[in-house]
Length: 141
Image (tube, rainbow, N blue to C red; front, side, top):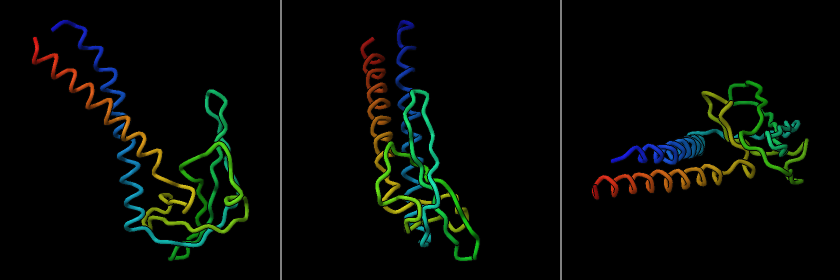
């Protein structure tokens, strides 16, 4: 086998990175759904970030009180380009959080697993495809 097989490490690395990111997000969401505690919260502000390309992402910041009385105020993990009326400042929302680490939370209706599923799918395709090509190449030499 020539050195060309080294180039297959690029899609394999990208695929494994996407797969890890997606699976981590799906497991995190599953854990919050399974063991999380619900609380009524309020959107108190929006954090706005910009990507290197200039795209704007809005992250709603939710505030709520935990069962043991701790006040929490954290921005959502996911940002979107536009903000619907449902998540304006002052809106009451349902928050599901990890009682041991309230920074791990999800805003019902805002946080979804779509991005995590997309990363998992892309990671699976790149990883499995690259491994299949490498296996065929090894077997046909």
